[in-house]
Image (cartoon, rainbow, N blue to C red; front, top):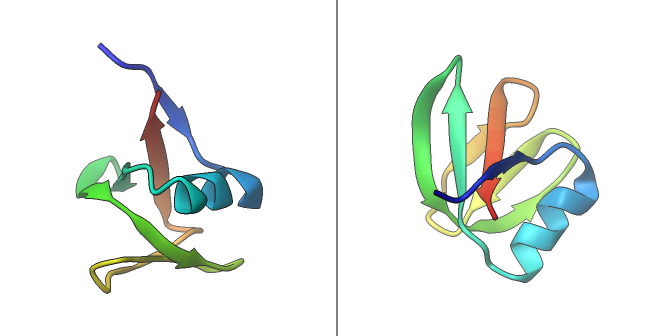
Length: 65
């Protein structure tokens, strides 16, 4: 079973964006996004390739490695 690693730093999000690695997104412990590919991100938001917008302060972002 692959380990999951939390994305915290801007460089974590950028690495997932550049290499188009899927991530999982949780809100209050509930899975709200699976196999999400990051299109862009800034200090407040993560934007997916499917048009979803996730608030960094409210969500937990995990990558499989």
